[in-house]
Image (cartoon, one colour):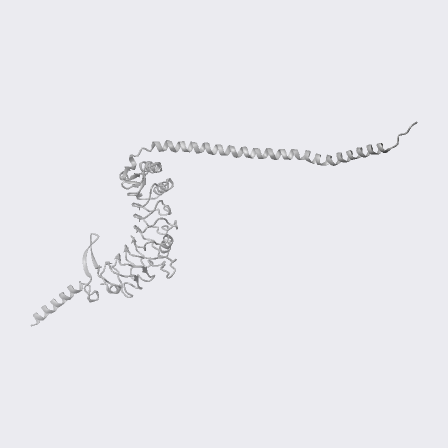
Length: 397
């Protein structure tokens, strides 16, 4: 009898465990919990993918052994305070993936008990972090401040479409106030970034090694790279580069040459719409001589007349003609500058001669002005004397 009762209890426990996915009744059987393979290692994973949750309540009841949280494909417009509960001590939690949840706002106190998290993934959300919103202030500069050991931050396609041009300033403010001093990898792909108004946006990430800016709208390096002394990989593929400015290439060479660097700098310019004209010549020569590792450099292509089907390998271009043309242009420009200089000098000389002539003629003019009244008086006196003589009677002796 006892044996049958024990079997019944075990069966019921097993059924309960299967129904709950091994996570407990709070998860309502929508998630799975247990050990599995993640990043080629065995970890305790809580997986709530495409479960249709509309709030994060279940995350307040994570098992103590949880190492990886995958909470994706849900509908969570706003993360509340204390996503992982107020009292939980998740010492083993190292990876949090909250991608594709439609998240629009993360409050300043959303994340607690995350001191050991190494990787935070917020890809494919709809975040607003702007302080310029007319109705709400979504800017919480300390949003990541509790991730004191964070090493990877994934923000691919994480921001709302048509995000304000102030994105770089808002990001910089978050980086500064969240004190992400151990961050090594930063992903910002697919965010429609065309420029960085804050040139020092990444300068308060002193440990940063990998910066991923692929699939954006960048046309130049208009942010400070020299402050990233440990940078080893700069991803610029699939942007809007039609050419690379010589100053940007010089900056990359200077970064590579910084003393104390322990790794080679790798840059990826693949799949940019380069033009096959003389504007690409400096880039072509740079690819052949630089010590920077331009990943896949042998496959960089440019387009003729802006046509995708009419392309050439950049390293195969004959740039000697462009160099000669450039020299001729510089010579012509030099002659033009010289001619303009001579014309300016001649104008100054002419103005000086006119001024000198006026100065010399001034005495003559003044003399004429003085003599004219005197001569007029003398003339009048002579005329008066003549009249008087004519009026005198003739004397006969």
